[in-house]
Length: 132
Figure 1 (cartoon, rainbow, N blue to C red):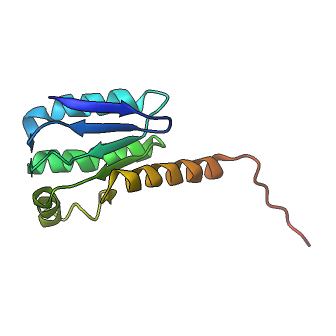
Figure 2: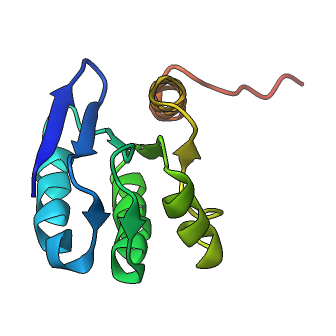
């Protein structure tokens, strides 16, 4: 599977350079994402701008991957869906489960906001005192 990988400070952008995103490449793609999950920069933005066809098993794999990332305090955001991929995900009723943005820039914003949220939730600086 040909992919373009661009690692930034807070996330890695993965852009499959293929027309069809199908089950026969799912294992390799999942392995690539799982490897990134265990890196210091573990948030992923999946840019699907070149993908025109996605099959059911790959669509479901994206839902599972996203859940795996969120379970490990990492973000997984999908952006730049083509109309055909968006329609397929909607038909499967998966677009409501996936974190999808129209543009890569908006995906960057989501990842950065989720990072801030995780930092705030994990902060030991917060204490609540009973003022009575």
